[in-house]
Length: 170
Image 1 (cartoon, rainbow, N blue to C red):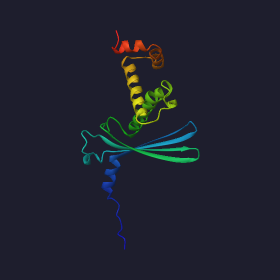
Image 2: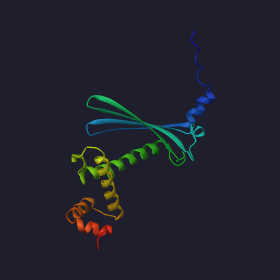
Image 3: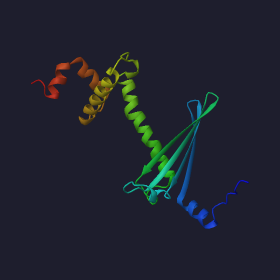
Image 4: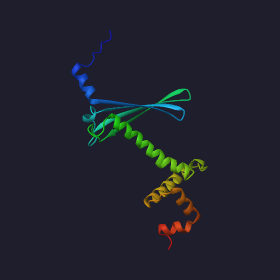
């Protein structure tokens, strides 16, 4: 005979509700619907060997596109305590983080450096070229270049100027 499971006592249920927070967003655009649900907890902090852990979060992203739902789950550990970031704020921070990566890195590499049309694919060449592209973009950003595309064109057309600025030529 299977053993019956007993629910948590009322006190523990209240404690678990206090430990958890949930926030949800629903978006529609680009021909798809997206739901994001973040659940944060402080109940796991004592079990983690992580310095200054504030909260542990799970983000479930559900996307309806072309007639099918796709689900993706990501887990986060943050040093932000509840008084600095509740579940709604953490969900916004996670979304802003990925938007910054997409707009600040992938978009620049795809449009300015035309990385998607690169036909080099053998051996370590793709990784080496990606490292060179990242180095070039980071170098331009340290120079506070406003228009990355214009700077790339200028240094491509005047390669001696690039080597002069790098300190290889006088």
